[in-house]
Image (cartoon, rainbow, N blue to C red; front, side, top):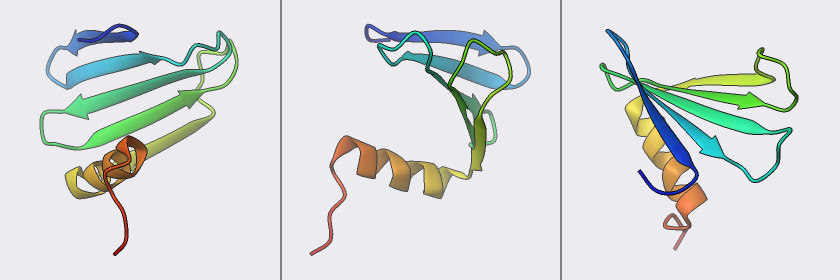
Amino acid sequence: MGQGVHVQELMGIGKRYDIDTGDRSTRVSVVVRRDGTRDLYVFTSDSEEPTAVLELDEEHARKIGAVLAGTFFEA
């Protein structure tokens, strides 16, 4: 994938995408499960425990992705 995104196959689960935020103390990981569910993990320290975890179905993940990409707007 593009620079700053590392992909790892999670056998029997799906794929994990680790996103480089440019800040050593902040990490973001997204797990895309085979059933379409996405888990968003935010790490804000060197801890292995996430600060926040969101489980998103496919529809909600697409909405959040559209907002983050700047393609969603209200008429």
